[in-house]
Amino acid sequence: MHPLHRHTVVFEQRVRAEMATRVEPLPFGTVVITADLPDVYDHNLVQVDAAVSADVVLAAVEEAAKRHGWDHRGVDVADAAIAAPLAAAFRSAGYATDRLVTMALVAAPQDHGSREHLEAAALVDVGAHRQLARALVAEQSSVTSERVLDQFDERERRLARHAGARAVVAPPTDPVSRCVLLTDGEIVEIDAVATLSRHRGHGWSNAVMRRAIATAGRRQVVLIADEGDWPAQWYARLGFRAVGRSVSFRRWPEDR
Image 1 (cartoon, rainbow, N blue to C red):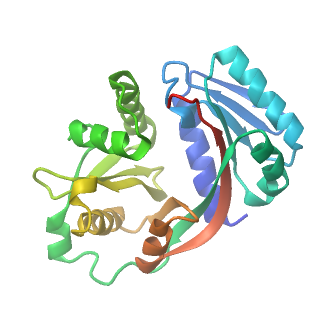
Image 2: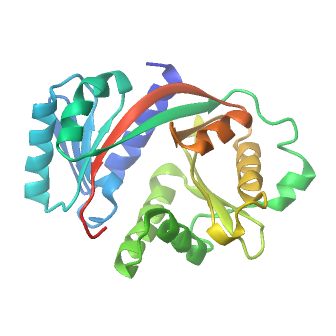
């Protein structure tokens, strides 16, 4: 496993564990339970870190779901090589598969620190512009419940405490685009890059990304993208390169 991919996985797992209400060890990984954020599925799941049979993982997920009242099923596998033998069984069990790529910045855009780009976006407290954050979550995940959106708000408050979360927004006044920056002091992870659908095509996400890269300074910049989706190609044009792959298996409730 590439060192930067491993570093990113360990960072994310540490933050997830610190935000959780309970973490249960498994012979091949962990169960993460965040009981007060039940609808934030990425914080209520099974993490797989070592080779194991699909039957064992599926049984562990069902046991965890029964004990903790999950209406979804989620499994994150840190290494795509470990996930490969599991894929067919998870597909047969009704899970969707997301193939993710960890990307590291190896060559920043030459003009990423220009005054024009810096003025097009602003670094703000992650708690700022909450209506924008909620609207983006609603668009990206089709969530309309205020109760669920409140849980995503709380998730970001915890990310501020445990991962130094800040946000970059564009334009600085009346913003329509946003990303979140997480850091452990050595790396800066760019997360949740999104623009309101009615404002896409005007370069706002590009402005957010360039300001985020400039904000990182000398720290290594990383992000995680869906390997099969177009943003991964855009990130490559901005100077990011793949350093590792992971897989997420998800089965959603019908009313999500």
